[in-house]
Length: 74
Image (cartoon, rainbow, N blue to C red; front, side, top):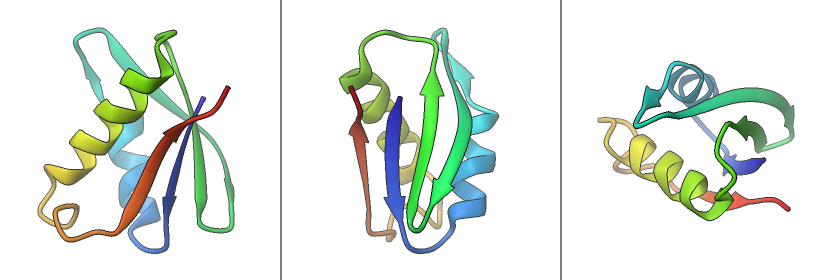
């Protein structure tokens, strides 16, 4: 599972990652707690999953200026 911490654009992040499916990597939204969004992923390398999620968000027009954190949860 990975955690995305973002104060704004949470709905856009959820929609973006739920619909992401490239290179065999998928994300599924699990829950929201405050500014934290939790996603499960189909790959075991959670560091890579968190990095991919961050990159995908940063590539969006609204994501390039967004302050957020993407981190793996063990």
